[in-house]
Length: 577
Image 1: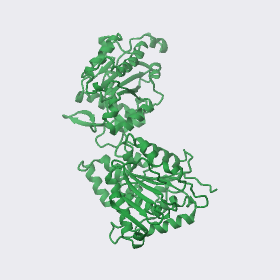
Image 2: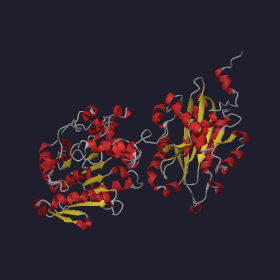
Image 3: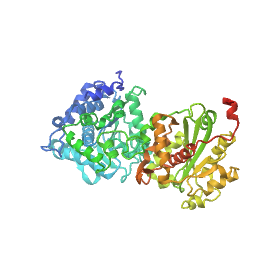
Image 4: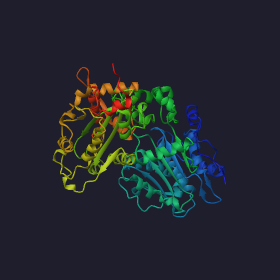
């Protein structure tokens, strides 16, 4: 048996030096050579002169194709590397390469009536692969005699083996029941936004269990938002394999992304570095065009800087990259203290304040606790959110992120038994719909019972739509003086600016939850008047309620509160003058 590793631990040096990101030669050189002979002969019909892949492509394309087909051991009819990911910037001929790979697989396949599948998220993306594939067949007399194109079915059939390559759009076509042994998934990032994508991909790739000569290839650019769902799952897996953290020799990732040090100093904004994630530079993409488009985005005149960075420079979008982001976002990741929990706050802090924010039933209900640490007086931040099950139905585009947060434990899902009340606001909630409110108050009661809330202005609330929370607090014997209405909008400017400064100075730490990372990434800052600012959602589906709760708590902590309990001085001692 051949011994190999798909780890590429020196990828950061390789990518900057324009070297191959595949750290080994094809496992079976004869198989690689035979496949490359087919691939290189295919014509790219939408380029002037209809050149072949062999005439038009750089070596990185041939290395990738050779790795896929060169992993097949013909003596046992088994492919030793079966899962591949190509993460690459837009305009690097990704869909055309996809078509070439699958036409090559259709020709090289030996199984009678085999099924091959290109799975695209939309009908438009499906066309991006089918059109060049059909063109390759029609513009080559030899291929046209061997293969039959069926346009209305987006299908290409091998006339001898009767094997069929189908190009399927997930938003229009039925994926279930496929027995495909060769699968290519295009634009994986879009599947990451779909709640049922994991089940769909499992169905699409199920045929590989019996067709051991098969493969699955994922092709994608970066997402225009923070990675989530199946895209995040696969990205994390292939990065782990590449970095030598996951031992999986059946997976190979070719990821054109900037090394962390280049991301940290924003080196991706320098035209001299555009080649790092654009290996087709000078062929299908050009530095002067990218430079012009970037300048336009920096002026705010294009489709959006965040989208441009994700698509054309393959920069992962997180908390730091939105053009109009909250100024604290840049320092958020540098202020993480994962040891922070509610119990930890109670143990470490001399006083704690809380902030609450939430809208209707299709919003999150956010709670933030900020404690002032004994001795250091640093602010320690812990946040949690609750959401009713109706959010999963109304906000399909964020379901995968919500599920991720539930798994993390930073979001609690509250299941609604009576769907007839889904249009009610929190002001009108039935007594049975208080699971989220009880969850909030249970945590607040822990802090109060520890004697760490101040006797006045301990809990800051958005004054709109909080009557149910106030009623529950009153039932649990919280004093009216401990509640404070926090004015919203531009009146939160001091909290917005002050917390950013404390994050930069690292005198404010947080628990590093994916919930808050998401909310920080969803927030944008808008000017109000001459010096005030307001934090708003970056899109209608975005959620920032826990971040708004944090700003409510910041307002209270800036008032330098003191706890009502006396045990603090028993722990740290009291100075007698």
